[in-house]
Every structure is written in C-alpha cells, then in structure tokens.
View 1 (cartoon, rainbow, N blue to C red):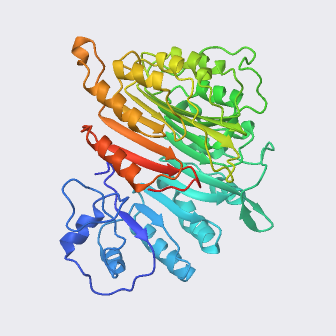
View 2: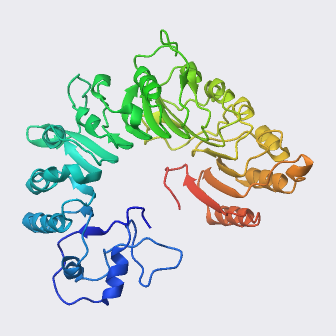
View 3: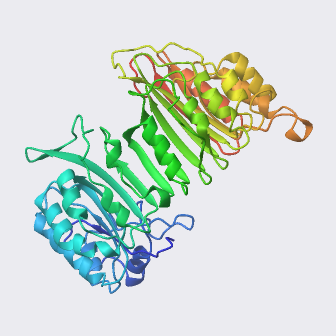
Length: 470
C-alpha cells in the first residue's frame, strides 16, 4: 500500500448514476489503494493493485457517495463526453478533498482544450500549495501562467511534457534552443522537490534549465537533449542524486576534454542511464565522474548512418567502475533507422575488453542486434569472463550457441571451487531470415530444458521484413 494511503479516482464521465453493483465493503477496498492496473474482485492475495475502471458501469455513484476525501486525481476527458461534465466532476472531487490534504494530480491528455485550461486555472492553481505530485502535458504559455508566482511547499514529484504553441495549435517545435524559450525557475520555489522528469523532445537552451539541482534525488531528462557541458554541470550540482536519466548530444563537443574539467563526486548515485547522440570516439569525460555507489548502468548510443559496432569507447569509463557496477545494459542505434533495410548483417561487437573491464557484473543486457562472438561465449562459459554473471540478454542467429554456453556455464564447478556462477535468467532475441515454426519451437524447447531458476524470454525478429513474430 502506498505510504500516503492515497484514495484514487479515475475521473471519466461515461457512466450513469444508479444503484451500486457491489457491497459497500468491496467499494471501500477499491478505494484503499493507489492504483495502476485492472481490478480483480476479489483481489488476488499477491496483487495489491486495484483500479476503479471496468469494475461496473455505475461506479460514478460510488465515487460521489463515498464519505472519504479524495487526494489523488487522474483526469481523463473522453472525446464523446461534454467537457463541462469533467469540469464539474473534478470540481466536486477537489472540494471533497478539504483544505489541507496533500494532492496528487495527473492529466493523461494534452491540455489543449478549454476545459483543461479551466481546470488548471480555476481548480488546480488555487490549490497548488497542497500538490505533492504533478504530471501533465502543457504548452509554453500554460507553463508560464500556471506556475508564475506560485510556491510549492509540498511538491515532491514533477513529470511534465512541454509542447510549443504556434498559431493557436500545440505542436512539438522543431527547434527550440533559443535562450528564454522556457521558464522553469518556478520549481526552485519547491523546497521538498526530489523527483523531476522533463520531456522536451527537441531540447532546451542550457541556461533555461534553472532547477534546484542540489536537492534532487531523481532526474529524468531522457527525452530532453542537453550537451555534454550541461550534463557535467548537472552532475556537479546534484550532490544528492540517486537515479539519473540523460540524453546527451555531442554536436558542439570535440574530444571530451572540456577546459578545466575536474573530477566530479556524485556520492549517492546508484542508477545512471545515458543516451549518447553521435558521440566522438573519445568519451573520456565519463572518467571524470566519481560514483562510488553506482550499481546499475545503461549506455545507449545513437549514430548517423550505420550502427557503430565498436564498444571499446566505453572501456576507460567502465574500468574505473569494476567494483561497483553489477547491472549493465548496452544498446546501439542508427539515425535515422532506414525502414527499407531488410537485412542486418551479423557483426559481432568488440566485447572482450569491455567485459574484461566489467568482471563484477551479475546481469548484462545487450539490445537487439548486438551479438557476442563465439570466442567470447566460450570465455563466459568457462568463467574466464563475467564469472559472476547470473542474468543475460543477447541476440543470436541460430540460438544454439547461446544454449550451449549456458549449459557449460551452469554445469561447470560451482563458484566455491573457482568456477562461474550459474545463469538463472535468459532473454534471447532470435534474429534470422525467414524464421519458421520448427526453428522457433526447437529453440524454445532447448531453452526450456535449461531449467533456469528465474525463467526466460525468447523474442523473434524476422530480418526479411523487420516484422516482430512474437
């Protein structure tokens, strides 16, 4: 159960008011949980998630008549429903929430309609002092009016997607890197803010990211492009950061040797996800990060044209993290992805040195299209590489080389006698031309026979047309 014991309302208006279909005790059980999934009545003993949607057609009577206050709002506007219905329902819920209860507010749709603006301006804005979670999609104009001269004494979590208004329409602007395009400084008036996610697809001018970095523990800029220098500034200021997601562009960056760059100590960082857009071959700026607690690392790389297969650029960074990083995810992408390509050559990446620099890994996940050379598979099977590996995600053409490696690894002498640790989970991406049912069933039987403790997932991709067969 959520620590705040929040009551949640899924505010749609497509239900008529009438007699309830369930006893009152069942209704109360529904409202006792912060909800993220479909309801099961009676609920399963191992699943605490419950939701009001799809329970009964007459749930609205229950919401209106339930005596408890509401403090968590998920606002949905069905296109076939009159907008005033949602406004009236939202107003009723907020009135019932009282004057002091902390509020969590989520808008599922873009606030492009008049009702969205009315709800924001007339209902939510006067109660901003009580909001602890806010998730919405807003235009730059609404961003300025909604947060202008507002203090957020309770705000802890922000998840905002920003669009740009042109000629009365909300659009994702193709280029919005002009200084002063956005004003995010209002979030500096939120002393309790710890978790922020900003989705600005085409990036933001570095000077406009005026956020209270020193108090943030979770930062998600995975959909907002920033340059290398801004990333390093954020890391330097975010002394409490525990979980970070960043999209870094290298358009104005040459060789990773920024003038005067010093080692940056990020003492509490445990999970770091980096998407590197057209990086240079020299990623030495990553070596300047001192992250003693980093255990989970995601490295994604976007390159124009063909996917770059050389993994050695990551080695210097990982070499300094051998005692901390336990979970590594690596992905390579092409910009743009050419949909006309019907064949992806089987090119094995240079993984030897990379994996040798990561000998303490317990889980390794390589995105679809990343293959492991047979010689490297042999070293993993014998424990010469990744002796502690327990979970693996990898691509294969025939799959039997992966199955053989796991068999050898799992039946080798135990770690107590110097052998490798057994693999307990496998995610296998089968990529081939014209995969047939016989091949797929054979691989499935072979993986099943491994009897992995945490199971397996097999994903099939037919290279002929790029279609997903599963």
